[in-house]
Length: 364
Image (cartoon, rainbow, N blue to C red):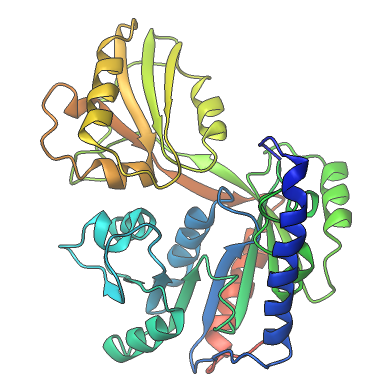
């Protein structure tokens, strides 16, 4: 599953599974209280730790709903340095709200973006401060049992399916795969564009979804590079050269699974130096110096620094980077698309839920 496992960790996984199992049982038995709200609430999450594409799928939902509904997104703001409830605005920094909420806010400034470790308090505060909100999207909220969402979307990576994983710390799962029963939709993310019907049938059979659940396959769509240090999101005019040119890049990643991006870039660049950092990493001045020095030492005629959209949110905090290095920083936006013409069915399920549910309740 992408990492070396020590068999000595397996007993700890059993203990972890016992603890999370008891917790879920207490919620399922309604011994622990779970809150519902008189507004549609859509949960986007996964069972595994990181790397399934929650943020691009959250952005897909925002784009789908924002024209007809007042959308709000609530996240915990992982690794932010603030506390309590924070509503994103033009003065917000990554340290205030976290890198993923900042990425979403820059892309959709008209949408309410908020962070709060206490999701119940977060929803209540959104409804108080933004009373016109039509729907709330809980980003990475599948394990947050204190809220009962009206609609749950569970993500699983095609190459690292949850059904073949193990509980932490032996594996990557935050809870048992049996709990995927709470999902209304299961998305198999990062699927190959050419996934065969046989592969699809095998995956569907292994997932063994319930009759009330829908299962779809999505794939990643990498878009044109965009300047990191630019107000415009379409600043690609300085990005010159064709795929056959002598071009080199320093790839800077601080995400859970950078390999798909690396493989994508190998098709276009003859020289790649990959500088890996841990997920949600806060870069230092020493890191910036290393990145720029590595860029200067590239042998290619045309050379760039390429990063992810999430990393760009953190790198953008370094406003004193001088030219020409400043203009060498680009990020690759990521989108998602549905395979096998399933987009319309998925879209209808989401829009119909939001439109028909005047109060938040289970639909399955």
